[in-house]
Structures are given as structure tokens and as C-alpha cells.
Image 1 (spheres, rainbow, N blue to C red):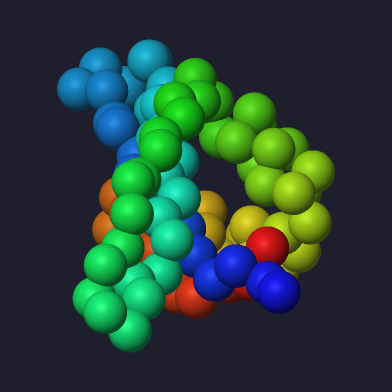
Image 2: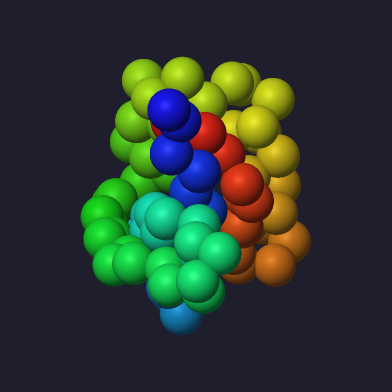
Amino acid sequence: MDTVYWLHIVESKSPQERIPSTYMLARANAPRQSGEGGGMPTVHYPSWEGLAERLANCNVDRAEIEKAKAELDKKGSYTRLPRSC
């Protein structure tokens, strides 16, 4: 049985232009019918390239990764609901 989860990415922009953004990736199990969710483990990435590579290694397709980057550039966050793993 597949587990359904939510994927959240938040960009932390530096106030100085020369310092690149960092990224936090959080994964949360979708709430059960009882309304219970679960823990939300997070992983921090020092670069977009590292995060994008990790997502690709987890079988997130290139179009979804590009969509995430566009949302991050525009809004500073990205949420993917739901996804099976």
C-alpha cells in the first residue's frame, strides 16, 4: 500500500545578494480520516542544486522539480499535495 504524503519546501533568502538561498524540505504524512497527521521531519539543503538532485533521486520528475523552483522564486515556498511514495 502506498503512503500518501505532503511535500513542503521553504526557501530562506539571504538579505545579502551574494549569499545564496538555503532550502528546507519537510515531508508530512497526509492526515488520516481521524484527522491525525504525524511528525513532519525536515532536512536543510545549502543549495537548490543539492535539493533538486535529491528530489530527482527520489523519483520526482523533472517537470515537478522545475515547477517547485518557479514557485520558490515567486513565493518563497512550494507545497505538493498529495504524493504517493
